[in-house]
Image (tube, rainbow, N blue to C red; front, side):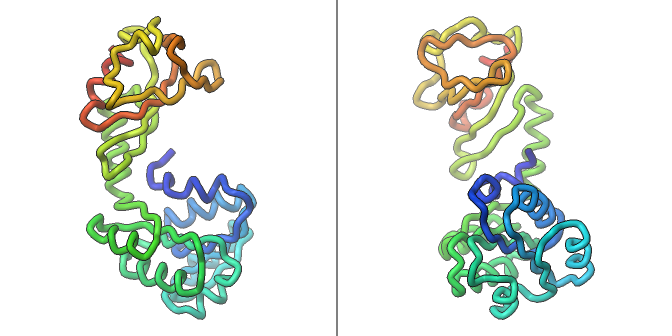
Length: 234
């Protein structure tokens, strides 16, 4: 999964919602595709008329050509019945004004991309969930994939102080054949949350043994990532 989509998971797996997506660029269209596939009702707002027409040709949505910072435009997009507003443009000022307008119109769930990390606090202060600097997130994801090929997916938590990641246990791993009780994990800094084995998810207990080929979902403080990765890969 691309990291810039992580911030919309809660939208995608929720019950049917009415969602206003502002911005029909790469991130916006990816969100439109996912949400419409899961049968959410979607309205799209973009200043570019050609993008609006392109979206209408591909998806069953309402597309509004206009400025999302103007209250009447969001009203035309159905703000009165919207469950969520997601700002996906690459302009933080536009996103911030859009979120403020959406909040004024009473939309409860507000989500935004933030290109400059130093702007994140402003969005949080007005009650928006944010995904900071998606380009950097993609770069970090690619670097991690190069550095640790066994790590299949990861998500940073607490501004990078901790991570949740999935890692494949190799035949050289010191943990193979050991139970959780027998592992020497730094328990204050790391926790095995789940194990995927033969397509089934296991909630591990103290007597659960680790096998080669297991995909372990691990929560760990960032300072322990390298040490813990070696336990699972050798």
